Amino acid sequence: MPEEEPEEKKIDEDARLALVLLRSYMRWEQGDLAREARIAPSQVSVYERGKRTVPPEVLARAADAAGFPRYLLAPLKRSIRSFRAAAKGRARAARVLGEDFVSELIDLGSLVVDTIVGDLDPDEPMRAPSPEDREEAADLWAQMERRTPKQRQALAEEAEEFQSWALCERVAAASAEKAASQPRQALELAELALLIAKHAPGNPAWRSRLQGYALAHVSRARRACGDLAEAEEDCRSARELWDAGAPGDPGLLDEAALLDLEANTSRH
Image 1 (cartoon, rainbow, N blue to C red):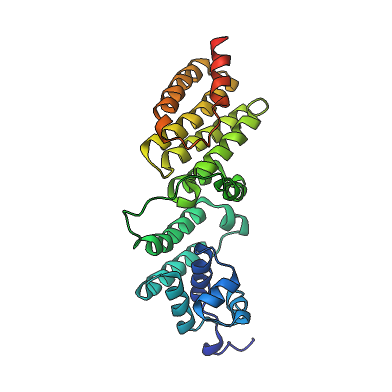
Image 2: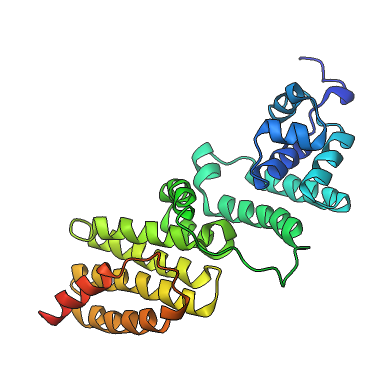
């Protein structure tokens, strides 16, 4: 039987994952973390790969750099420990794709995000939607696309980064692509786009505009599924939401999808 590793050489997995989590949610590369937290660049990779345990003072400096209160490091590590314990014994596929895993991960991530952004000035203007948001939406959709419908819904409801107007637009486009060949999948995606629109940040008028856009795609998918009565009702509601949101529209959304839908509806 191999000798047990000396206590001082054991890797603190909770500290390792806490370091990774802090860096990830600040959207830092390893070099950024090294610079901001005054850690030797070569050591960040060593810590994150579990080749050496993360010293408490290093984790504390990382927390300071991320604006994360030191007194919450212990609760964060306990949450990670509970999460790892719950995941033990599962098959790899279940750990990666299981709904419980995703739910735990979202809760854990929310703890960090809420704390980091919790001290922001509530009166500070929210960043306006811009075309550049579409670049990030492509990456978000790549992450979301491989999940199950329930997991996608959980992300849209719980994870702020997935509550993006541009992601709504991207998911709606994916729905339109599937409308002819896979109408039920198209409907699931259109309803996901609508869910994202309901949680998207911004003023009420902008959210109304976005919901009208998404609901137009729901109507299109319902028509493809043969649910004509509901499709027509959704089409009317989409137009109402779209028009009501005109004052908040920065000109990012294309009305063509709605006009095409209305044209098809009037012919039937």
